[in-house]
Amino acid sequence: MELIGIALIVLIVVGVAATVAALRKDGLGHNPPVRSEDYWSALDLPSSNYTFRIF
Image (tube, rainbow, N blue to C red; front, side, top):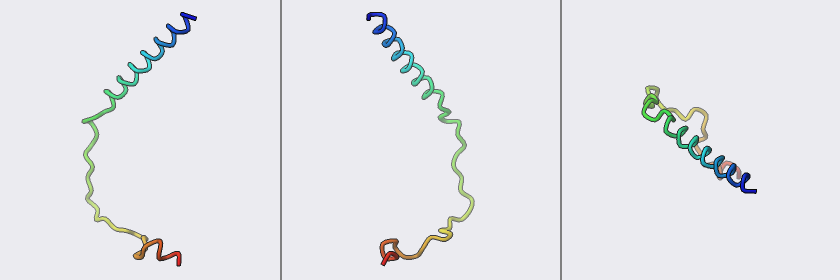
């Protein structure tokens, strides 16, 4: 029973360490900035509210 408890604790510690390592190497600061050069358009969105279109 003690062996299962020790294995569970080791598994939790390894899981937490792997999660922290993955979050630290997430690429923060290396992502390209978001740039918008095209004009925004609503394309085919309706000009009236969805609630009013039902009735």
